Length: 251
Ligand code: PGA
Image (cartoon, rainbow, N blue to C red; front, side):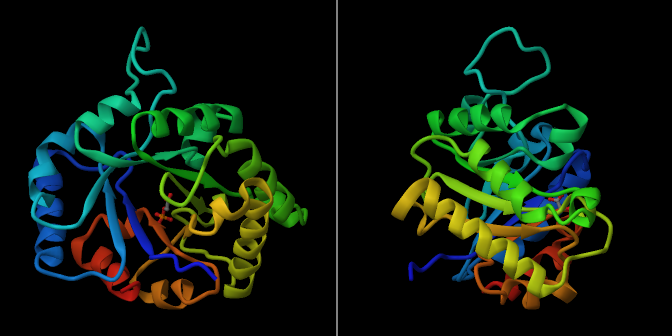
């Protein structure tokens, strides 16, 4: 079985003015300093903070990521940001297809795929989010919905270096509710099978993260579930201590 190094990704979402953002980044960088971490760590701040905090992480192994990108390289797309711009700002990763983008901006899996293609074009690793709604879960559709989203969102030539999948049940995001460990294991196992069918052995090293109400108190047990290769963390990534507890659980 291929070894997959765990990845902990912090998604700050639309949170953080300059002072708070710099303090939070400084707090995380201080914890990372001099540590020989056994997992990869990426922080995805709002775009406005990228240039303000990249220095903080310079001497550590913490990487920067964007929260979204446009599919085009440049052009008349007011308010959008390209993958090339994120790369230019020091990012190595970009989240695409987060459920808040799928819902707030009507992004379907074809759009998400185009964004993942753009991420690869720019040399970024795409963190592709998938997840079922509460209604789909109640209707017993979880595995089908997830497999469909994975297949339709995956760009060509996806592999372990350029692509990460994040399974985030929509109903678990920011709600304090999580699936049972067995349920998480079942979905992750299904994603692995789906990835193997879609990509063959190129999928062996592709990491599948869990996201949705991950915090210090539940991180160790979730990260111990078979086929969980890390976590995408929202609320708990906004405090350095809380975030680092999750990083430590993965290390
Ligand atoms: P949460 O968000 O950790 O606050 O539930 C996770 C996410 O949306 O990525």
